Image (cartoon, rainbow, N blue to C red; front, side):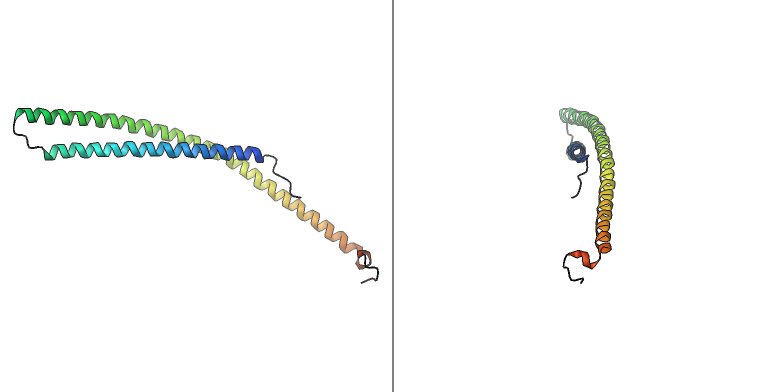
Length: 146
């Protein structure tokens, strides 16, 4: 009968923690990508504003300047958001790495345990086979010496 790894419950907990940390990391990375995409879109918007507006009078010039200033302000805010989200993603990566390390240590212990149990099982089986072989054919229960 195979003996269970005594820390199996803790290993399951560590795997659950690792899975949760991986989900948090994936969400953080998705938020970083979303912020980066918004920043790219704002940059394109600014480029489009610069290229597409013919300026014919002072009112148009003022409107274009205001739009560019607003877009640049939005870019600065998006840069701050991207940096904040990258910091969150880095924190999530650190949490995932710690959870993975905790699970990995227990996985190594489980592998060693399984190896020891298998070796014990093989020794027990070999001992049993040696005892059967030592009895000889007459002791096997057929009574005729064969």
